[in-house]
Image 1: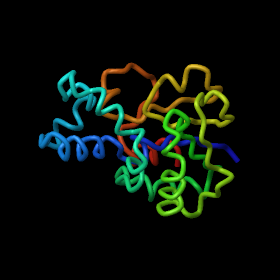
Image 2 (image 1 turned 90 degrees about the vertical axis):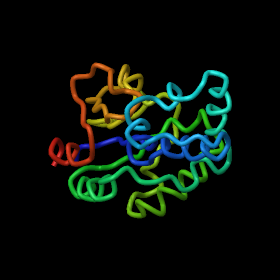
Image 3 (image 1 turned 90 degrees about the horizontal axis):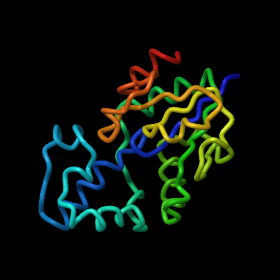
Length: 174
């Protein structure tokens, strides 16, 4: 059975929206949906706010109840019937994210065993046929095929195999 490693943030969990929610809470500035999904959040805020924004992800509650990326739940359920699925997240940078991410996965993807959840720093350690991720840096030493999942921060990144949503993942792998 082939293996698929799937990143969490900006692939199945919408952290981008959380940044916008917390920014609105702290600065009373709201960005239109189109603007949020057209560029990196850091590019939308003034430079003097960027260190505060970066700090959000270190907060205990940041990853607690993120919204699902549309279609991820259904397509991953279908992939699970044909592939061995691993959720691989570079969570070590944000140690406070570990428990909220485990709880989030248990809630939305209860059929994925804890043995198939990998918290790491460098994803090249992952032995899989495919890695679906929003950041090409994780493909550099990965031995399988990197599949770039389009996110606001990578729209201008050049990568051969790209999917824009979960329906495109379905078409590619099922």
